[in-house]
Amino acid sequence: DAKTTQPTSMDCAEGRAANLPCNHSTISGNEYVYWYRQIHSQGPQYIIHGLKNNETNEMASLIITEDRKSSTLILPHATLRDTAVYYCIVREAGGSYIPTFGRGTSLIVHP
Amino acid sequence: GAVVSQHPSWVICKSGTSVKIECRSLDFQATTMFWYRQFPKQSLMLMATSNEGSKATYEQGVEKDKFLINHASLTLSTLTVTSAHPEDSSFYICSASIYRDPYYATNEKLFFGSGTQLSVL
Image (cartoon, rainbow over the protein chains, first blue to last red):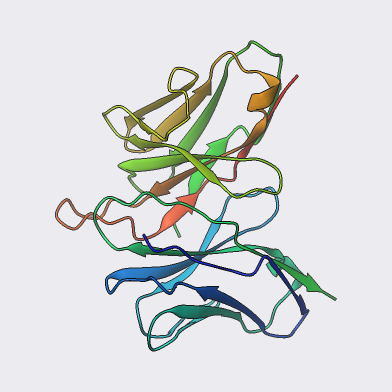
Protein backbone atom coordinates (compact mmCIF):
# COMPACT_ATOMS: atom_id res chain seq x y z
CA ASP A 1 0.00 0.00 0.00
CA ALA A 2 1.10 3.55 -0.74
CA LYS A 3 2.57 5.63 2.05
CA THR A 4 0.77 8.77 3.22
CA THR A 5 2.04 12.00 4.73
CA GLN A 6 -0.06 14.17 7.01
CA PRO A 7 0.68 17.23 9.14
CA THR A 8 1.28 16.32 12.76
CA SER A 9 -1.26 18.73 14.16
CA MET A 10 -3.82 21.34 13.20
CA ASP A 11 -6.32 23.50 14.97
CA CYS A 12 -9.64 24.96 13.96
CA ALA A 13 -12.24 27.27 15.46
CA GLU A 14 -15.57 25.76 16.36
CA GLY A 15 -18.13 26.28 13.59
CA ARG A 16 -15.52 26.76 10.91
CA ALA A 17 -14.51 24.25 8.28
CA ALA A 18 -11.58 21.99 9.10
CA ASN A 19 -9.50 21.02 6.08
CA LEU A 20 -7.13 18.14 6.69
CA PRO A 21 -4.61 17.40 3.93
CA CYS A 22 -3.03 14.11 3.03
CA ASN A 23 -0.25 13.47 0.55
CA HIS A 24 -0.15 10.10 -1.21
CA SER A 25 2.07 10.75 -4.19
CA THR A 26 2.86 7.06 -4.78
CA ILE A 27 -0.77 5.98 -4.97
CA SER A 28 -1.56 3.44 -7.67
CA GLY A 29 -4.61 3.29 -9.89
CA ASN A 30 -6.56 0.72 -7.89
CA GLU A 31 -5.90 2.15 -4.45
CA TYR A 32 -8.58 3.93 -2.48
CA VAL A 33 -8.14 6.76 0.00
CA TYR A 34 -9.67 6.08 3.41
CA TRP A 35 -10.08 8.34 6.39
CA TYR A 36 -10.56 7.26 9.98
CA ARG A 37 -10.47 9.24 13.19
CA GLN A 38 -9.74 8.34 16.78
CA ILE A 39 -11.13 10.30 19.65
CA HIS A 40 -9.03 10.08 22.79
CA SER A 41 -9.22 6.68 24.54
CA GLN A 42 -11.62 5.26 21.97
CA GLY A 43 -11.32 2.95 19.00
CA PRO A 44 -10.97 4.51 15.54
CA GLN A 45 -14.07 5.37 13.56
CA TYR A 46 -14.53 5.14 9.79
CA ILE A 47 -15.26 8.50 8.17
CA ILE A 48 -15.21 8.25 4.40
CA HIS A 49 -13.37 6.76 1.44
CA GLY A 50 -13.01 7.40 -2.28
CA LEU A 51 -11.16 6.39 -5.42
CA LYS A 52 -11.02 9.43 -7.70
CA ASN A 53 -14.31 11.26 -7.44
CA ASN A 54 -15.09 13.61 -4.62
CA GLU A 55 -17.25 12.04 -1.96
CA THR A 56 -19.60 13.42 0.67
CA ASN A 57 -21.49 11.81 3.51
CA GLU A 58 -23.10 12.94 6.72
CA MET A 59 -19.76 13.27 8.44
CA ALA A 60 -17.42 14.86 5.93
CA SER A 61 -16.39 15.53 2.36
CA LEU A 62 -13.39 14.04 0.62
CA ILE A 63 -11.71 15.99 -2.16
CA ILE A 64 -9.19 14.04 -4.24
CA THR A 65 -6.95 15.89 -6.69
CA GLU A 66 -7.16 14.99 -10.34
CA ASP A 67 -3.75 13.30 -10.29
CA ARG A 68 -4.82 11.51 -7.06
CA LYS A 69 -1.55 12.36 -5.38
CA SER A 70 -3.22 14.20 -2.55
CA SER A 71 -6.58 14.59 -0.88
CA THR A 72 -8.32 16.77 1.66
CA LEU A 73 -10.83 15.75 4.28
CA ILE A 74 -13.28 18.53 5.02
CA LEU A 75 -15.35 18.79 8.17
CA PRO A 76 -17.72 21.58 7.08
CA HIS A 77 -18.70 22.87 10.52
CA ALA A 78 -16.27 21.59 13.09
CA THR A 79 -17.48 21.05 16.66
CA LEU A 80 -15.56 20.43 19.86
CA ARG A 81 -16.44 16.75 19.52
CA ASP A 82 -14.44 16.60 16.28
CA THR A 83 -11.22 16.96 18.28
CA ALA A 84 -9.40 13.73 17.42
CA VAL A 85 -6.52 12.18 15.54
CA TYR A 86 -7.36 11.77 11.85
CA TYR A 87 -5.75 9.01 9.84
CA CYS A 88 -5.44 8.95 6.06
CA ILE A 89 -4.86 5.47 4.63
CA VAL A 90 -4.37 4.35 1.07
CA ARG A 91 -5.14 0.77 0.13
CA GLU A 92 -6.46 -1.54 -2.53
CA ALA A 93 -10.03 -2.68 -2.42
CA GLY A 94 -10.59 -6.41 -2.27
CA GLY A 95 -8.10 -9.14 -1.64
CA SER A 96 -6.30 -9.58 1.62
CA TYR A 97 -5.76 -6.28 3.26
CA ILE A 98 -3.66 -5.64 6.32
CA PRO A 99 -4.60 -2.22 7.65
CA THR A 100 -1.79 -0.15 9.10
CA PHE A 101 -1.92 3.33 10.53
CA GLY A 102 0.58 6.17 10.42
CA ARG A 103 0.84 9.01 12.94
CA GLY A 104 -2.17 10.88 11.62
CA THR A 105 -3.11 14.52 12.23
CA SER A 106 -4.13 15.66 15.67
CA LEU A 107 -6.97 18.12 15.14
CA ILE A 108 -7.92 20.40 18.00
CA VAL A 109 -11.17 22.30 17.66
CA HIS A 110 -11.26 25.28 20.01
CA PRO A 111 -14.20 27.44 21.11
CA GLY B 1 -23.64 0.90 11.00
CA ALA B 2 -21.91 -2.28 12.07
CA VAL B 3 -21.03 -2.59 15.75
CA VAL B 4 -17.98 -4.18 17.30
CA SER B 5 -18.19 -4.74 21.03
CA GLN B 6 -14.99 -5.05 23.03
CA HIS B 7 -14.76 -6.07 26.69
CA PRO B 8 -13.57 -5.19 29.18
CA SER B 9 -13.04 -1.45 28.71
CA TRP B 10 -10.29 -1.42 31.27
CA VAL B 11 -8.55 -3.94 33.45
CA ILE B 12 -5.96 -3.77 36.20
CA CYS B 13 -4.08 -6.93 37.03
CA LYS B 14 -1.07 -8.12 38.95
CA SER B 15 2.14 -9.00 37.20
CA GLY B 16 2.21 -12.66 36.18
CA THR B 17 -1.51 -13.08 35.70
CA SER B 18 -3.34 -13.58 32.41
CA VAL B 19 -5.97 -11.30 30.97
CA LYS B 20 -8.54 -12.13 28.29
CA ILE B 21 -10.05 -9.48 26.03
CA GLU B 22 -13.14 -10.24 23.95
CA CYS B 23 -14.09 -8.73 20.62
CA ARG B 24 -17.54 -9.39 19.20
CA SER B 25 -19.18 -8.34 15.96
CA LEU B 26 -22.78 -7.76 17.02
CA ASP B 27 -24.70 -7.50 13.77
CA PHE B 28 -22.45 -8.94 11.11
CA GLN B 29 -20.14 -11.84 10.47
CA ALA B 30 -16.44 -11.11 10.57
CA THR B 31 -14.18 -13.65 8.94
CA THR B 32 -11.20 -11.48 9.78
CA MET B 33 -10.45 -9.51 12.91
CA PHE B 34 -7.38 -7.45 13.67
CA TRP B 35 -5.75 -6.78 17.01
CA TYR B 36 -3.83 -3.56 17.66
CA ARG B 37 -1.84 -2.15 20.53
CA GLN B 38 -1.44 1.55 21.16
CA PHE B 39 0.96 3.23 23.56
CA PRO B 40 0.31 6.80 24.76
CA LYS B 41 0.66 9.44 22.06
CA GLN B 42 1.53 6.82 19.46
CA SER B 43 -0.35 5.34 16.54
CA LEU B 44 -2.01 1.94 16.41
CA MET B 45 0.40 -0.92 15.95
CA LEU B 46 -0.98 -4.05 14.30
CA MET B 47 -0.26 -7.10 16.42
CA ALA B 48 -2.01 -9.89 14.57
CA THR B 49 -4.65 -10.85 12.08
CA SER B 50 -7.24 -13.29 13.32
CA ASN B 51 -9.06 -15.53 10.86
CA GLU B 52 -12.06 -17.60 11.84
CA GLY B 53 -11.24 -21.27 12.11
CA SER B 54 -7.52 -20.93 11.55
CA LYS B 55 -4.40 -19.80 13.36
CA ALA B 56 -3.74 -16.12 13.73
CA THR B 57 -1.00 -14.43 11.76
CA TYR B 58 1.29 -12.39 13.98
CA GLU B 59 3.31 -9.36 13.01
CA GLN B 60 7.05 -9.44 13.36
CA GLY B 61 8.16 -8.96 16.93
CA VAL B 62 4.86 -10.01 18.49
CA GLU B 63 5.19 -13.13 20.64
CA LYS B 64 2.45 -15.57 19.70
CA ASP B 65 2.88 -17.55 22.92
CA LYS B 66 2.36 -14.44 24.98
CA PHE B 67 -0.55 -12.95 23.04
CA LEU B 68 -2.90 -15.86 22.41
CA ILE B 69 -5.58 -15.23 19.84
CA ASN B 70 -8.63 -17.38 19.31
CA HIS B 71 -11.22 -16.75 16.60
CA ALA B 72 -13.60 -19.63 17.15
CA SER B 73 -16.66 -18.16 15.48
CA LEU B 74 -17.61 -15.55 12.90
CA THR B 75 -18.60 -13.14 15.65
CA LEU B 76 -16.01 -13.60 18.38
CA SER B 77 -12.26 -13.23 18.68
CA THR B 78 -10.33 -13.21 21.94
CA LEU B 79 -6.89 -11.96 22.86
CA THR B 80 -5.28 -13.39 25.98
CA VAL B 81 -2.25 -11.65 27.40
CA THR B 82 -0.47 -14.41 29.28
CA SER B 83 1.80 -13.78 32.25
CA ALA B 84 1.32 -10.07 31.91
CA HIS B 85 4.09 -7.69 32.94
CA PRO B 86 4.10 -3.91 33.40
CA GLU B 87 5.56 -3.41 29.92
CA ASP B 88 2.38 -5.02 28.50
CA SER B 89 0.36 -2.12 29.86
CA SER B 90 -1.23 -0.54 26.83
CA PHE B 91 -4.47 0.24 25.00
CA TYR B 92 -5.59 -2.82 23.03
CA ILE B 93 -8.06 -2.40 20.16
CA CYS B 94 -9.77 -4.91 17.92
CA SER B 95 -11.33 -4.32 14.54
CA ALA B 96 -13.39 -6.41 12.18
CA SER B 97 -14.20 -6.31 8.52
CA ILE B 98 -17.49 -7.27 6.99
CA TYR B 99 -17.67 -10.53 5.10
CA ARG B 100 -19.62 -9.79 1.97
CA ASP B 101 -19.30 -12.55 -0.57
CA PRO B 102 -16.79 -15.37 -1.04
CA TYR B 103 -16.00 -14.25 -4.57
CA TYR B 104 -15.80 -10.57 -3.80
CA ALA B 105 -14.58 -10.61 -0.23
CA THR B 106 -13.43 -7.16 0.63
CA ASN B 107 -12.34 -5.38 3.74
CA GLU B 108 -14.10 -2.29 2.52
CA LYS B 109 -14.57 -0.74 5.91
CA LEU B 110 -13.08 -1.51 9.26
CA PHE B 111 -15.17 -1.33 12.39
CA PHE B 112 -13.37 -0.93 15.67
CA GLY B 113 -14.09 -1.88 19.23
CA SER B 114 -13.93 0.77 21.92
CA GLY B 115 -10.59 -0.51 23.17
CA THR B 116 -9.29 -2.05 26.40
CA GLN B 117 -6.92 -0.18 28.67
CA LEU B 118 -4.69 -2.76 30.37
CA SER B 119 -2.66 -1.74 33.41
CA VAL B 120 -0.31 -4.33 34.86
CA LEU B 121 0.94 -3.60 38.37
